[in-house]
Amino acid sequence: MLPDRILTRREFVAGAAASTALIAVPSVGAVQAPAQTTPQAAVRTTNVTLMVNGRSRALTLDTRTTLLDTLREHLKLTGTKKGCDHGHCGACTVLVNGKRINACLSLAVMHQGDRVMTIEGLGTPDDMHPMQAAFVKHDGFQCGYCTPGQICSAVAMLEEVGNGVPSHVTGDLTASMALTNIELRERMSGNICRCGAYSNIAEAIAEVAGAKG
Ligand code: FES
Ligand code: FES
Image (cartoon, rainbow, N blue to C red):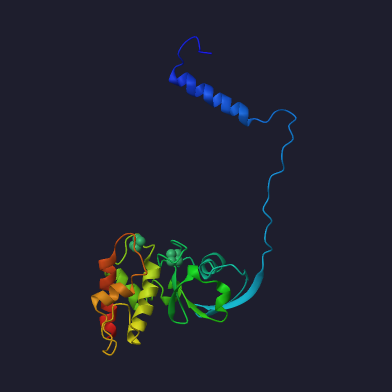
């Protein structure tokens, strides 16, 4: 049946909302179905001991805990940052037995007895690692969120170059390894800087590389 008059748009919307609310309210005395619950998997824990920044740390962890969450949540070493938590950004880069890894992609239980170095272990404000000092000197950051990962990554990257480890852009595998600009950018490509401080980061790393050579 047609209404006596044409409804305004406002009246139509208000009426539709009221009808929906009525449908949503259960009638008095209706039996409510019990809420569906997902059975919780039993939490499995294990003991693990890490050597973090030169100090032995014994922990009891849920076996699913990443190294990143172990450092940040259990050891309160919040210098290591969580960016993507998926291995894309490099913000979580730390050194494990001298090699750089993405701590978000590694379970802590895989590192029993390993030496883990975070940005806190590299240096302090009063006694900075040369790479930290170079980042300050060259203004190699804006917000600073990516910086701990950049610095840890750069330190390990120079070790790789010094040890003759080739990269994807290394042309001559028999020549002595040189940190050209394109090598530097390729080798640091796993560390994203959302502020785009790349040119200053590259200058800082190049200075330390030059000082080493
Ligand atoms: Fe680990 Fe982004 S937080 S790679
Ligand atoms: Fe802000 Fe790199 S300095 S993300």
